Image 1 (tube, rainbow, N blue to C red):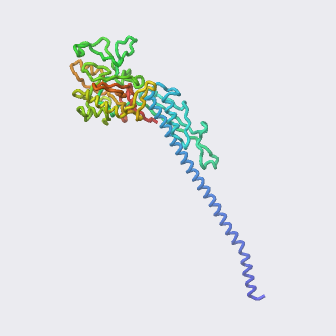
Image 2 (image 1 turned 180 degrees about the vertical axis):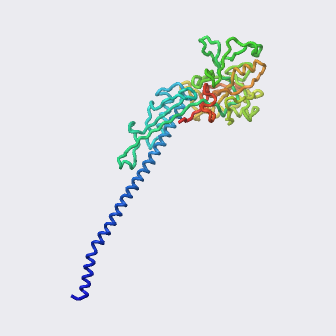
Image 3 (image 1 turned 90 degrees about the vertical axis):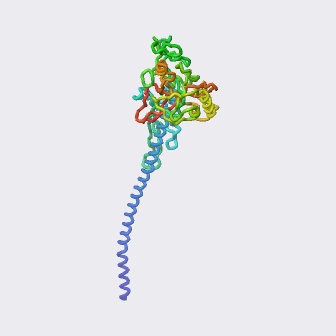
Length: 417
């Protein structure tokens, strides 16, 4: 064997001897990297699962809260405008709350809500059970839990989601779009042959003093004068949006000597004066805010013509709307709320009588309450026929239920939880 051959064999043997150790080390490093890669993938998958499912469940929770909020607001609205007395399972407040809540889907499915999930709570500010509480469910107990997307790999296939909301109908103390005419608030007619309850009718007149000519006599207080208790006091006698809904009134121009439900007085809205402004304020919305206690400056002059003209313009905006005794509601309107439902400010009839008996033909008046009034018809002589209707309003900021927690006619609807 030559030296060259021996050297070649030696190198080959060396290569054979070292080869297995190098290959084994290389395979060890590759396996270690695969383990770390697997752990990293699992961690990334877990994080992705957490992000996707938690995000989805947060969305479901927000949607459930929206459904509960909408249901509570719908229930409170029906309580104020359809029937305050009907809290039954089939009444408008409960059914409106349920239907509205179900219309707001939670991850593509309507939440579950039953009549038992709509309850009425007492409002400590008003002393009435005018808070509507609504609970909605997507839970295993109700048979409709929210299905997870990726968490089911780890054995979590569903999650329970629920929400609760409360809305209240709060007496309002401020209005806009107020009419430039005012009528007296409702009083208790005395004496009454039915045992002391009010005998008030739309044709009654407020009587506190005896009459001397065409004026009430300051020195002749009647033995049983009519009684008026304004909003904000226990036993308030004013109009009730539930009990008086649909009552027809025929309003006539003031004859300067009577206080009657049918007699209206024209007054100047802020920034307005004269027949043209008066007519415009009947036909359209005057945006000024008119709070309880606002002074009403009498409109000078005969407003019979402008009243008829303004009413004509108003009726043309929604000519097919009419009152239906069958549903105790307005039918045929082009609008969700007919523009022919107007807000009439009310004054204290007792203050009017007190001022009139001192010789004032136009006593100073101020707003004590409001009245919703659906305009049905008018005459060229300024006579206006309409129906009493519930209306919404505004409650003063930071004042809880406003300044008229008792006996307020207009209602503000708001979430309280």
